[in-house]
Amino acid sequence: MNAGLDPIDIIVELRMSHQDSANKWFGISVDDGKVADMLKENVVEPLRVKQQAIKSSTEVACMILRIDDVVSSKGGKEPMGGPPRGGMPPGMPPGMGMM
Image (cartoon, rainbow, N blue to C red; front, side, top):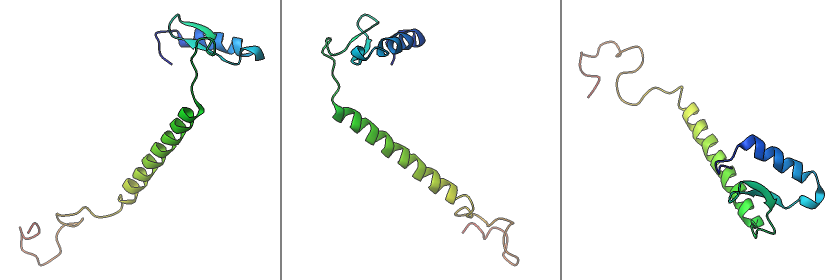
C-alpha cells in the first residue's frame, strides 16, 4: 500500500474497523485516504487475481532458489581457461598454458 498515507495510522484504523464483523469488506480508499466499505465503493478484486499473484510469486521464489543452487554448486570447480590452481604442471615451457 502506498498512496501517500501514513501506513501505521491507516492500518490501525483498518484493523479497528475489522474488529466488527459487519465491516468485513472495509478497505483503504486511496481517493480520500480513509477506511471505507469497498463493496459500496464498487472495488472488488476477483479471487482469480489473488490466486495468480500467489502462483507467480511462488514461481519466482522457486527460480531464485534454483539459481542459488546452481551458483553454489559451481563454487568448488576450477575456473575454465587459464592455468590450474597451483600453477602450471612441471615440464611445460613458459607461455604454453594459454594456448
